[in-house]
Length: 120
Image 1 (cartoon, one colour):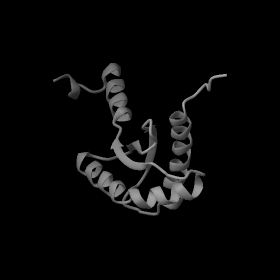
Image 2 (tube, rainbow, N blue to C red):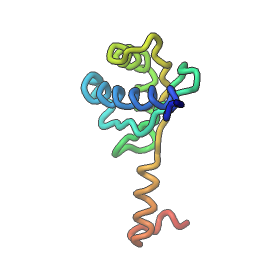
Image 3 (cartoon, rainbow, N blue to C red):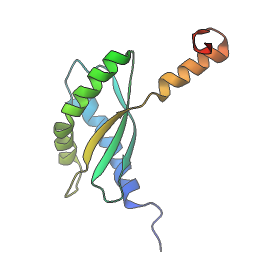
């Protein structure tokens, strides 16, 4: 009987859960503010994980600063996740900014007619 899900999909799902816990409880950096893990993609060889994060109430400058903080803390986050997951090798973490939430809010404002800024 074939497996329903590929191993990288299962690892991705578990990594997503563990990252959310680590980001909320272990990461105590007040510069980050409210960070949400929106998606995790793990490569087929389980060597690299792309983590997509959403940042709330931030402008472009703050996004760059917060992404730099996450990138600098990637090894520490990987160590903490490794303690929680039962894997021989934890994938290297690469963080990417996910602007889907802000794009959705901008489109919603445009559809409601409350904002004409995006029409230009």
